[in-house]
Amino acid sequence: MAVCLRLDLARRRATPTPRPLDLVPAAQAFGLCRLGSVYSGPLLRARRASDGAETDIGIGADGWLDADALLAFAAGAAAYVAVWYDQSGNGRHAVQTSAAAQPQIAGGGAVAAIGGRPALNLATGQYFTSTAPALAQPCGLLAVVQLPDYTRTSDQHLVRADAGTGATAYFGSARNWTAFAGSAVTHDVAVADGAACVVDAAFNGAASRVGINGAGFAGNAGTVGIGANPNILRGGALGTAVVGLVGEFILFTRDLTAAEASRIGAALGAPRGIAVS
Image 1 (cartoon, rainbow, N blue to C red):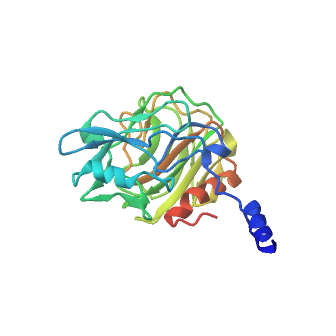
Image 2: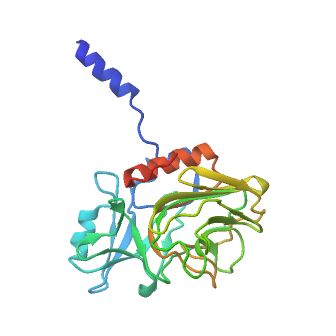
């Protein structure tokens, strides 16, 4: 009886790892794992390079992309992502109809990964478009990334409307994580090339902030919101895309507090071996 009681108390005390969409509402939410406890749909639509066939790939028993199903479909060929499904419930999926601009998800019998967990692998010029209304301030975003070169020759944007206007967040030429909404707030610590990290940005005028692995830097980013129909993992029509690995990308309908960014970042980063304070 005493053993059973101790086990029952342990179960009651156990606190499940929070899922981001259970904590803060999102405008758009993309990931290679289940981001909200109620989501049960596919994570992405994969295209097989050998014959152009496409299929939806869902969530495995561990809550992450079903890698076995993906590799069985790929059958040794490379696989690319035609649709990255929005888990927010708003149906604002990230889409790429051009085969050449679709990020890779698998090749050579292996799934691209950050810290042993599935990730998109974006080469130069690969990104998604989306159909979504403009997102006014306050709003925010969070992403899990690992880029081989955070400097490159131009800024690497995670989001921006195609007109090249409105708020954006990007890695600048000095490897600094920056939020821009008319003015810029730039993190004072540069990210080392090849390092995996969780980055966040809160757009809220003079109370804006940027964070890397939970360490934040505050300032005035300006007051404009994210424009309608934003590109995902690229800037505007003349903006540059991310080159490297991306695990999750979420646009929130309000700005995250520093505590929320740390809690969500830790939940997404820990399984990939990323320490978030």
